[in-house]
Image (tube, rainbow, N blue to C red; front, side, top):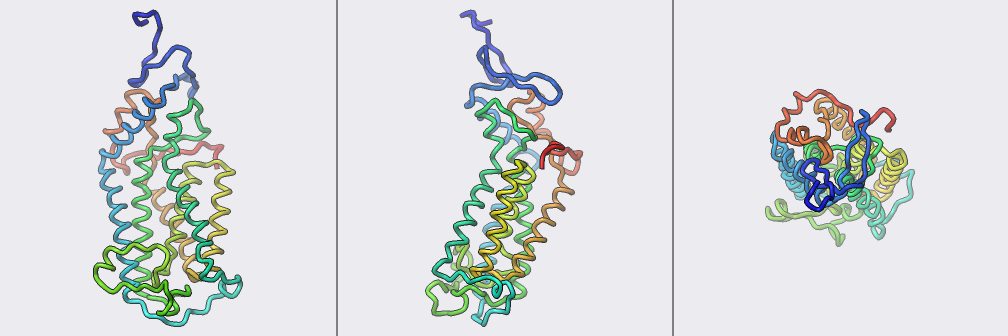
Length: 313
């Protein structure tokens, strides 16, 4: 009771007015849900920051960023060594009508929305700061998922670089079939190799498809951490459409897509087996659990705890 006669509730450093919404967790314990979204968001970001600073989580995330740069260098390097040669025979090309270079953007218009939505899906638990409703499945900590994705993509892109650097296949795309094509812009200097950024008009970096590796990864993220059945079905349907568009655009051989389709899920499954997801720490948890974010043991010391309820996909 304060001086004005109005009662307040305090939970995890948050002051709440009387009449605030309440929610009930699986154990039957009634918890008060913060009505002040700014305070809730600040608390959740504090928890994520503490996790990021603990157990070298930040170092793994930094490794992921460095890997993106190194992957760009590898793609530029293979383009530097690339030689224009006739494209290989591909049954996928023969079965699908070709989407010419004038419509090169068609597959990109499918790729980038799925790519952006995949990135946004990583941060969906922050939406809980703005609502009293709880999802039918357990949330995750953004920092831990960023760590997982950093390791996953580093492994996948390292395997990819090792594949296309040792066997440089002739690019099937129109701009890779002619040195006079306006989009054929081969790196010529060390500066070009080290600092050029081009995700669409490279040549030689074929096995396996980087576009497919990214979108497959985000489909797996959504399936695991945002398992609404309709949403999962939608993103996998878009992924299937994208595969056919990439082949029809002659951006990759069919084998590039096939290798990505089994390599990426296998790496994901291996990491799911070796790196168990710790229980999520959220702003509405008890202070003791929230403070544990900075005292968490290493991943291999954490027992397996499923994030998805039995009823989820």
